[in-house]
Length: 130
Image 1: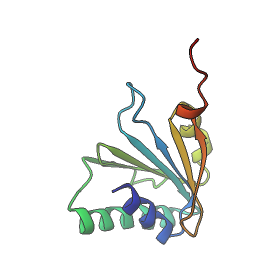
Image 2 (image 1 turned 120 degrees about the vertical axis):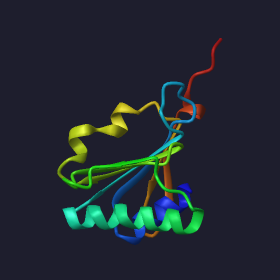
Image 3 (image 1 turned 135 degrees about the vertical axis):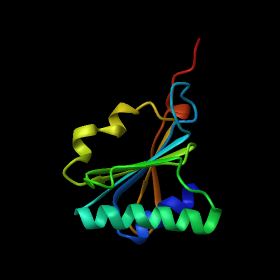
Image 4 (image 1 turned 30 degrees about the vertical axis):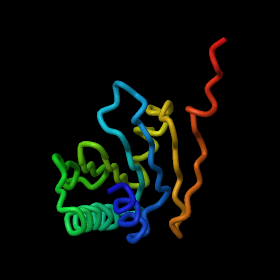
């Protein structure tokens, strides 16, 4: 499902697409957060709608919760194990989810062509206990 979500976002030209692997955090409400942004309310809606459509079409899943379709500043799609956050570009920096969940095991950035850049892996970089 994670790959379907990422592909759906990139298909609608989502910007600064990031996934956070939260599976190592006991207080996390999901295994993954996927965060991206759109340049305008119509693009935010197009991204969110495409995720909804593709995930349902390919997996049969519908989100347990969905919020933010009224203002289109921050749309949240909660698939329980994966929570998708689609921000308007002017709002993402306000909430700083990447910083809030900065202890995620792996943070992966997705380029527009779908290639990945893993730029943080705490499971590898944590110092070993002596």
